[in-house]
Amino acid sequence: MISIREYDLESLKEEMKRLGYPGFRGEQIFTWVHKRGVLSPEEMTNLPREIREKLEVGNMSLETEKVSQEDQTRKILYRLRDDHFVETVLMKYRYGNSLCISTQVGCRMGCAFCASTIGGLKRNLTAGEMLGQVYETNALLEDKINHVVLMGSGEPLENYDEVIKFLRIINHEKGYHLSLRNITLSTCGLIPEILKLADENLPVTLAISLHGASDETRGRLMPINRKYPIDELIRAVDYYILKTHRRVTFEYAMIKGVNDSAGEAHLLRDRLQGRLVHVNLIPVNAVEESGFFPSLEKDLVKFKSILEKKGINTTIRRELGSDINAACGQLRNTYHPAKVEIVQRH
Ligand code: SF4
Image (cartoon, rainbow, N blue to C red):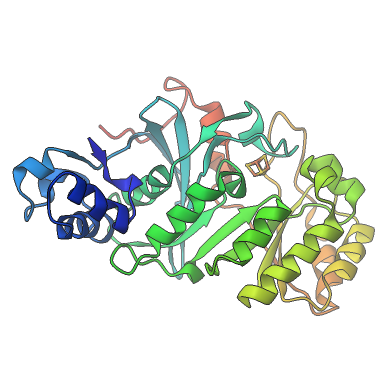
């Protein structure tokens, strides 16, 4: 069986030729799957039956879904072929539908505030499984997903080759043709891969999970900081900006009494001042296992104003769907079919 989502256009044409069919059949299949969003070979009406019988589109099934009563954020859990689960979060904004997808099953980066890392890394997702999260979710909606954020479970840059393949396919003009400007890739800061990404000519919005302004604070929250300290990380960000001319976002989870002091804000200000960056302050979702709690409102406001006084563009972003554990890894980790109140499909 040819699992179509795993193929880019050229390799699909090659595969058709290898099987003794004309290459244009590959392009027809690519268009059906990536542009028209069909979920079954049966819908590819301009293809001979003998080709359709060799094809497979779906690579996951919808397992369960939770819908936030606060803001209609939807958290969707997919079951992969090997019975691993992968989660996807759909957020509705004024500008459209934004989908946060996972790039790995679990994660080995060990960030202290993150539920995805609790069971460690199970495996990388394939490009086709990343595309599957977009296409399967798209099929549930009346309007199209027009922003994709690689910020669910997993460290995207640790799964570099498959993530790059995903970006090239989803951006392909004969397929879904999602603008790279509408894609955000979030990383905990793998410096060699940030430098490599800068040279790919794929100018996605880069988001850096920072969460601490000193190596001491960040190192406590994010073990990766011991390998790639903040000064070096910011130098890599400078290179990314130089090559892509894109503004880089720094994500900063505000954790009460841990990283939200005025001193930390001053240090962050000194590090980022004068750069083409944006800071997102996100009051952390309480994760039972971690014992972390969101910062107080007054501390959030003060932190923001310290950054803004030096011209650093800063927003306070509320976590969407906090009533459904929308932070990454939380649904997968708490999932038990008997326990979750869900909208069950089929
Ligand atoms: S925050 Fe991201 S990199 Fe860190 S453990 Fe969670 S999924 Fe992995």
